[in-house]
Structure formats: structure tokens, C-alpha cells
Image (cartoon, rainbow, N blue to C red):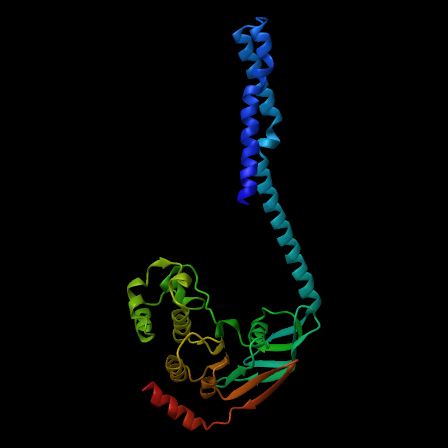
Length: 324
């Protein structure tokens, strides 16, 4: 780009400089032969300059025209890709969504956009209030895609999904979305109470080991660039404790936290929201302690669903000791 810019600058600058002396060189022999006066020479140069300026629009505007063409080309490509995606979605989206009092997945098949490769085939399960489900499997097997499909963000597949009302659900991705604004705005996003007292938010930050942020509650900032991923995941859990959703969907929401912090957060979740249902995606074996059902994705569309074989009383007792 720099080389091209240098050549363009040399060309346009050289063209404009030559245009200044060219009419004088052409008319100089007549001037020295005393056939025209100095005023006539200046008039010739001025007239040539006006004609040259009028005819040099393309040369002088080449940079602007090139930038305009590049922008128009990108927008045209963007529009074409959007239309292609819409056409692809309309041809592949056979997933039906219904509203229900609990989560129900029936005969769900999830495919890649090529409509040939199955990530998950004929998956069926139900998740009711107070239940907890853990989705496990190798990286790239389709765990996050399953969460996106439940959320309505992945249209490639078929089947039926029944979901609770949106205002009762909260999705936590691995990297939470933090809107630009005050830290207060970040905490109450998306369904929090806008009129909540600042003291409650400060107490929440202290309980999440983020005491230093209490001084910055009303500061405007790009928090996704200020906070580490671990701190962002603390903030995401803070939304759970603040907004108290009845259905919680977490896609590796504690991947950047140590296991002790993970235990404390899950124990607090059990204590403060005992009636909420939880669906988690994760790789750590420690997550088995916090869920009752395991959905294993095995590849090539295969899957298995089984209860986690661990005594619930021992699990809760263990967690309470850790919490204490």
C-alpha cells in the first residue's frame, strides 16, 4: 500500500508541477522573439492552467475515487454475503421454536452450513426447574453450537425446541458481552432493574472479589478491554445473582476461573437460586459435582444422556464445606 501510495503521489504531484511550466516553455520562443509581451505570456499560462484544471479532474480526484470504489465494493460484497446467508438459512432452517414452561428438545439435528455434516442427530431431552445439565465432549464437537441453536442463533438443522419466556432466561457465553457505558450498565444488562440502588451493586462487587471496582461503578469505559476474562466472567455471574433468572445457560462460563472460585460461584448459585434450572457447557471434570445429568457429544451426530452417578447429599455436603 505504501509503495502504491508513493507512486500515486509522484504521479499526481509531478503532473501538477509540469502543468505549471509547460505553457511557459511552449510560449517562451515567441516571447523571446518579441512577438508577444510578458503580459501575453502570463495570460497564456493562466488560460492553460484553467483548461488544465478543468481537464484534470480524474487525475486530481483519483485518490478519492479509488477510496469510494473500495468502500462501494466492500458494501456490495457485504450485501451479497448477507443475501446468501439469508437464502441459506431459509433453505436449511427447519427448527421449530415454541414457548413452554420448561426446556424441551425433540428430535433435534444440527448440521454445518453445507447441509451435509451432522454435529448432532435426533437429540431429545427435557430440562425442568431445579434440574442441572452438563454438556461435555471434545473441542469442536458442537457443544457451543447446541447452545447457539437453543438460543435461536444457529438455524442449520431440524427438530423442535420448546423454551421458557426470554425474560426468564439468561445466556452466559465464554466471553460475556459488556456494553460500552458505566459499570452499573454492564451489571444490569440485559434484564436488570434500572432503578436498583448503587449500594446493592457495590455489595455484589465485593462478594465477587471485585472490591476495587466499587469506586468505578459510575465510570464510563470500554469494560471488555479494561477487565480480564476472569473478571468479566465474575461480572457475568454477578448478573445471575442480581437478575435471578429461572433458566441459566452457560457456555464455559467459568473457563478463566480457578477451580476454587468455580466452586464458590456454583455453591452460591445453589443457595440463592435453588429453583432455577442450569444448563452448562464445560471441559473440567470438576463440573460434574454441580450437575445431575450429563449429555455427552460423541461425534458424527452421536450422543448419550445419563444421570451423573454421584450421591446428591454427598455432593451438596461437599460443596457446603468448600463454601464455608
